[in-house]
Amino acid sequence: MTQPTTDTPAGPSGGFLAEFKDAVSTRAFLLVLGVLALQLAFITSYIGAFHHPEPNGITLAVAAPAEQVATGTTRRLGALPGGPLDTRTAPDEAAALAWVRNREVDGALIVDPAGKTDRLLVASGAGASLSQALVGIISRAEATQGRGVKIVDVAPAADGDARGLSSFYLVVGWCVGGYLCAAILAISAGARPANSARAVIRLGALLLYSIAAGLLGTVIAGPILGALPGNVMALWGLGTLVVFAVGAITLAFQGVAGVVGIGLAILLVVVLGNPSAGGAYPYPLLPPFWKAIGPALPPGAGTYAARSITYFRGNDTGPAMLVLAAWAVLGAAVTVVCAVLHRGRGGPAVGSGTTTGPAARTPGP
Image (cartoon, rainbow, N blue to C red; front, side):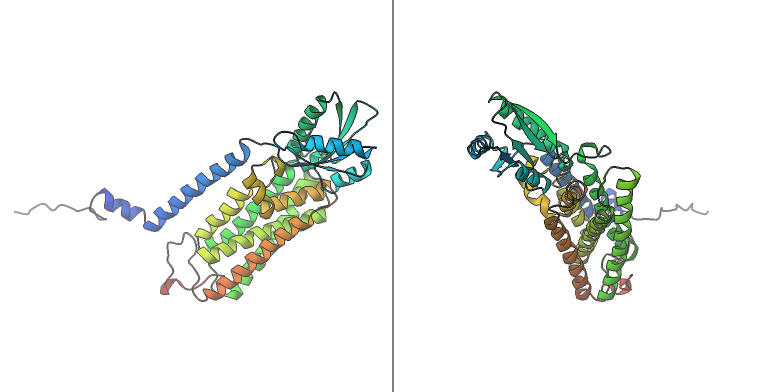
């Protein structure tokens, strides 16, 4: 008599724990924990920067026909509770106006001792929230002296640039393109280039992408949508530098940390850089930490330079451009150095399911 046979299902056995270990590798588990930490950092950074904007150190020039009046007003406004203003006395109205247009100050108060109404010069192109905060502070301070204020916008935002945010959004788009381009190189051909020649090839490909992205972004924001009326060539150059700097940073992080480098780039540019960029709330309205780091990171430097090019004839763009150039040079240098140090040991393509080893060392470009 033939005994019936029982088919045993193929696959791992040992219960749920064994199944879980087989389905989720230790590496994947650690990466998921990293994603969770990045997500929580994102929430903390954005809410921390934006939940309670408080004016602090808004630079204001004060001018009056009589030096004594100007000096007294400067001291009075500089002593307001909470320190919302950083005041300085201008020699005359022309100097105060030049300071605003050169981005040396955020606004200027022109005092008229013969009347009851003073003029406040603002620049909404530098951010509507900043000019509105300045108007509110000066209006209240003048009201306590029985005086009124006439608002004069000497660098108004374009009609298509709602609240002066288009520069910020353009720079954010350029930053996204920069780290995504570098990440795609890792996804398709390995996180680490196998030698310095291939590192240079990646940087060259990134540069070509940056030139195209800078031009197309400028054309869309300017001639097509009419949001940014600034010099097209200057904005194109800025966009190229922003994209390349962020992409080079991402390549450098990948050279140092492999796939994890993409997360580090997002941490630097998105989690820390975007909320501190002075977009929705310019620097004088941000908490101290974000106010301090913003100008030193690509989104902040790019946003400040874009606004300067668009509304201030390029005045005061030098420091921001130097910051971006420094990140670009540093990122490119680290990328090449890492390729030299890891020569012949290029990492596998992201998502390839392979690991670095003797059989996985045929490098991509």
